[in-house]
Every structure is written in structure tokens, then in C-alpha cells.
Length: 450
Image (cartoon, rainbow, N blue to C red; front, side, top):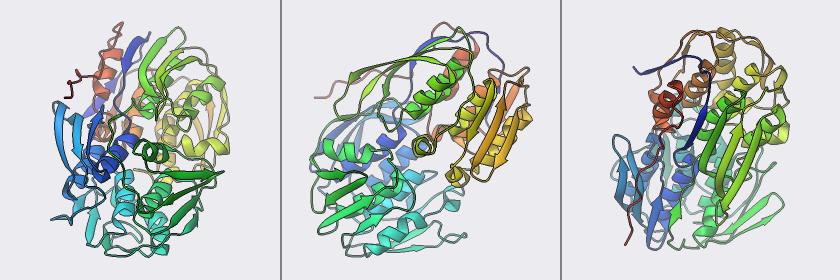
């Protein structure tokens, strides 16, 4: 069982890159496998979740070659041979591991195939609700059984079906649900439309455009016409701002710090964390240097004394992954921070509301728990504690950041889960704990592609 042992730091002056974006790596594997030719994907996230999705596409007939890999983790640069939307029946059930994104998107992809497929995952994934995708896919004509111990949960048994286009008004904002329905719509005859109640991550729409698949947006309604074949293209995955968020909070909360995160994704549906930290008093500069497809750039942040804030309801869908570490920032800030309308946190890898509240209380923070969030009265000194991540990667990393500000040695248990999204986190943590002037990059030389 691995663990992090963390002590307080006195400075943070660093420049580094974070691994490739998790959401985009899932989608690059899927759309590359559906395309009509050969795609080169650079800076793929070699995490367990994304490699599971890549191997799922391989099981469905999409061959890939590893051009460069991170030893002990997996491919960073790869070449995918697409199947022109013609997938093959897998020889065995497909293991999605811990990847909710992978399972939900693959379910949309497989809902309209002429063969049966089983999708399964680990205990955590098997406890997460799948009804949010099986309902709209069922309205399209999909035949999906949920055979989990909990009603509406994986494993998913997907039977052959012919899909019809629908207009689906989502009851809750979810990029995964939107993406699953749009993927299914690619295999339906006619126009499928998804209406979202609030703006969600738009990586699927942007990537579809990169692969020359036409979508149409009117307000919060996104439509796709079935039968289009993605055109092969090369794609560079930007650094994951959700991974960068942990270090951004650490730098923001430490007066006198300076941190430069390089080549990170600056998609406006993902940068709410920057707005929140700015409201709390952090000094930040964003420098975008590429805007084709996904905007990519550098973020420089200087630490300052933080003050509490209120998370707005419209920010929650695009902040959902960052809320655990925002709660840590709130505990380090002066004044009150209110996080509400985030009940979705209760059905992540853990019940992240209770897990965050309990962890912060164990470290001495003043926190009140609500059904849909929490209120944090910041400013109380944190002290070391032993925190069990409960197998949740974002909990493990968030409390590693809290430990950087706590008196004594904080121990975070069960940290193997961090590899599902951020292989190399411990490398950066070690560099910052030893107060090196510059943390080593999480990068490998890019091979020349003929």
C-alpha cells in the first residue's frame, strides 16, 4: 500500500508541465479509433483510466502503435489506426477500470452496434450511477442492461440495436451524458440533439470539429447528424488543468510563491478554477500560445493572502473535479467559503462531500456539511493527520496539498489511485517538498513522426 508523507513548506518557486488532459485523452483514443485513417496522438495521458479506454478501442478493432512511453505507466505518443466507424465484436468483456468517463462514452459508442458487448469496472466504478446514460440511450432504441449489485450500476450488457435520433433535454448538466448521446447519434439516421441546462465541458464538440465531423450549436442545444465518418488527424493533448489545480492552489495560498505551469489546456469550460482563485486573491497571468482546436498556454501564479468566496451555481459543472482542492484553499483562506449545488460530488469515486469534510476536520478546519456541499470557515491553523483517500485520486492529491501547510507530518494512505489521473504526481510532490528551485518536468522527448 503506497502513501504520501507530507510536511509544511516555506517556499514554492517552480516551473513544470503536468501530464496530458484526462478528458481529452479518453476522447482522442475513441475518435482516433473511429476515424478513417492513421492518427498520431501526442502527450496522451498514460494513466490507468486512459489506457483502459485505449485498450477498449483496441478490443473493438482499432490498432495502435506506441511511439514513446513513460516507463512503468504507458504510452505518451502513439499512432492509432482508425476503423472508419466499423467496429468489431470484442473477444471478451471490456474492463474500464475506474474510468467513469471511459465507460459512459463507450456505452454511447456501443449502443448502436450489431454485436453484444459487456463493460465492467472496479468496485468504485461499479457503484456509480449509469442510469443517466442508459435512459437517453434507451430512448434512442438502445438495449442496455445494468447488472450491478446496486440498481442502475455496472456491469453494462449492451445488446445489438438500431438507433433512432432524439432530442434529449438533460435533467442535469453533464459532459459525459452529452458526449454519450452525441456518440450514439453518430450511429443513428438523422439529427440527434442534446439540450444542456448549463454549459458543460465542450471537449467532445471541439474534438469532433478537429476530426471534421459537423455539429451545430444553438444556445445550449448541440446537434449531430448520423453517418459522418471522422477524418483522421494528428492531435496534441494539452496538459490537464485539473491536475495543475493542485499546484495552483498550493502556490496561491503561499505568499511569496511563484509557479509557472507550462503548456496547459485553457479551454474556457475548464478554467473556472482560475476565476475562483483570482476572486480569493491570487495573482495570475494566462498566456495563450495556441488556439487551434483546444487553447493551450502557460499559467503564472504568485501567492498572496487568500480570502473566502462563494462558488456560484453556474460554476459548479465545470469545477466539479477541482472542488476538493478548492475546499483546501478555503481552509487556508481568511473568512467563509460556501460551496453548494454540488450534490454530484456524492457519486464520484467516493462521496467527496463527506470525505473532504471529514479530512479537513481531522486537520483542524472548521467545516459544516450540507447535502449538496459545505461551508468552510477558513483561517484556523491546520495540523497533521492521517487521511485515507478511500481510493479516490483527487482526495489523495487534495490532502497532499493540505499537508504542505500543516504543522507536523501528514500521511495520506491508499495513494495508488493517483495513477488513474496523474502518474508522476509523487515526483512533483517530492521536488516541492525538498524545496528545489525548479521541479523536474513530467515530459519525454517527442519522437519525430515520419
